[in-house]
Amino acid sequence: MRLAKEESEKGISDLQRALEEAEELHEEDFNKMLLVIEEGKVKEEELELTNESLTTEKKDLQSELQSSKKAESDEVVAFSGELEKLRGDVKAKEGTIDSLQLQIQSLQEDKISVADRELAIEKQDEKICCGSWNIPHFFRRCSGLSASPKFTWVGSST
Image 1 (cartoon, rainbow, N blue to C red):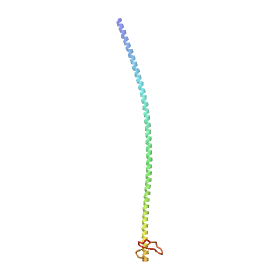
Image 2: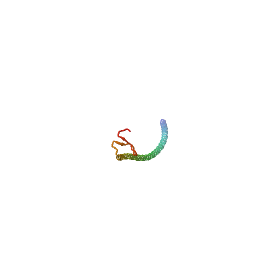
Image 3: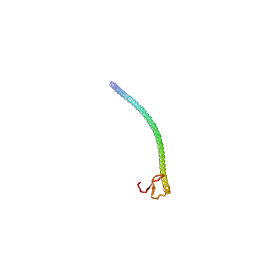
Image 4: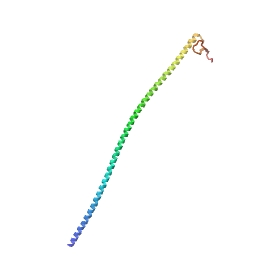
C-alpha cells in the first residue's frame, strides 16, 4: 500500500506538474495573444490614421482640382470674349479696308474720266481753233488759247 500510495502521490505530483506546465503554457499563450491583440490595435490605429490622412489629402486634391477647373473655365470664357472682340475689330478693319479700296477705285475712275474729258476738250479746242483759222493739217497747236496762238511744224523741236 505504501507503494501504491507512493505511486499515487507520484502520479498526483506528475499531474500537478503537468497542470502547472499547462497553466504556464496557457499563460504564455494568453500573454502572446494579448501582445498580438495590442499589436493589432496599434496597426489598426496606424491604418486609421493613414486612412484619415489619405482621405484628407484626397479632399484637398479634389478641392484643388475643382478650383483649377473653375479658374481654367473662367480663363477660357475670358479668352473667348477677347477672341470675339478681336474678331469684331478685324471685321471692322476689313470693312474700313474695303471702303478705302472702293474710294481709291472711285478716285482712279474719276481721274481717268477727268483725263478723258481734258483730252476730249483739248481735241475739241484744237478742232475749233484749227478749223476757224483754216490752218493746214501739218501744223499743230502747242499752247493754250491766246490772242496770238503759237504753232509748230509737226516733228519740229521748236
